[in-house]
Length: 470
Image (cartoon, rainbow, N blue to C red; front, top):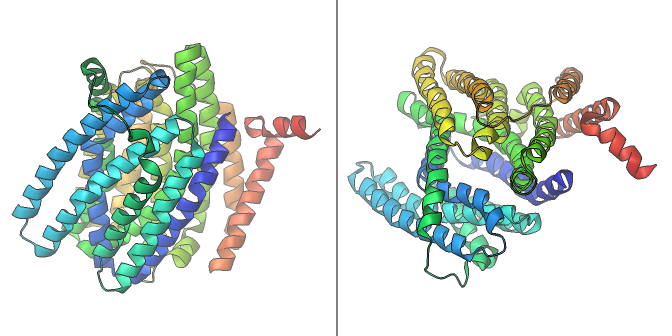
């Protein structure tokens, strides 16, 4: 079931992922580094507000809906009431900030950011609802329509001269179109009745996670604001484009696995007990590593050509140096969030994640202040890598005291060996540059890694294939 659902989410997320790649390539060519920097900073700010004010609703929905599948209306009504309250709160904060901000350009960007925040929050809650209900086709349809329409509208608006406003308006209209067509069905016909006891349970579960994810967001995105403050909006734009390349690849792949894996782990725990949940977690981790580790190695090795093909000329030189460190940091963050942090979520001690993430976030900010003046853009990448490594080690060590999350050490060694061998082979292709060379390099990497995975029987893939066809 894990492989089948992961494959379905891969198909469902493949088109949006490709569109997001195209968006980075297109926007980094149509926008100057300063304009891209303003666009990236608005997206980062919206992301932070989304995490702080709305993420607890999405996380609680993912955790508690499996226990309310037969009668979900009360839970959905409670979630919708919480969402409405957060809309009023964030609307007031947004209007106040835009009124007090002295810069006219940023004043209008903040006013645009408020409805964009609300739309993105509801869009992500709707996506989570479909993921928990194991509906990958509908998930992909909603996400695909948003990605395609946002890029098309955003590119047209940039060409018309709207600059940083273009991709932001495109994203807003793309999400609204997707929600209007396919994202509102589950919310129709809900009553205004809420459960105070259920709301209390959601708050107790979700608020510590909100703090955790807010601190995680600070760890992954504060560097953009610090770069803009210390070096200017242009360097922040260059760094953001480089980071987005790694994130759109690795985070997308790991998210696909988690979309399929997390509901299965929760159901196993709720319906079959701890032993079944731990076995499911072991399978989940094997698949997560088998997909994410070779992708990270490929990005590290092919960073020069990836930057050459996918980024505008003003972004490429710095991206070549930044991208490998960003890829490794995202890998570490994903393994922590999608595997080791499951101990705190399944054990219902989400407060434990707060202390881990707070420590690494403080370290990240401190290192950025230290290393950006010393090393420039690459200093932020160093800081992100070190803080993500610390967070992973702390989560692995402390999480075992809450809920034992098994790690597939033997399978992990086989995956690491296969990935490093693939990277070694790709090193011989680095003299070739350009789009077609990158396609060949990706195909060669996939073929070599798949061959080693079959020979070493990673995740019993060879055994299952032989049983299926022989």
